[in-house]
Image (cartoon, rainbow, N blue to C red; front, side, top):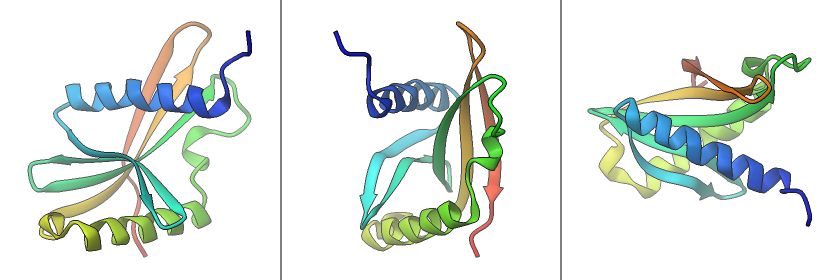
Length: 123
């Protein structure tokens, strides 16, 4: 039997973190949203807040700290994708938009979740 692919592992992490965010009061309105060649992992609302979530997973002790995994170029792509999302979904245009990063960090059997609100600002 083949081991799970990186993509299928990533989708499983996204689903776990989606459930975690929903338990925190977010309503997820889109998952794996395609905006041109870009993808938004999760898009959620809480009141008048619209949050574009970037999901990452790492093993504990990884040489790349998770919050550094979203470089400037990736940020630019997420901002572009979020603008496309807002153009296609005008019902959210009056919401305050925010970019968050949520990390699943595998600590050898357990998973720790870190949520960084306002991980970066749109420029």
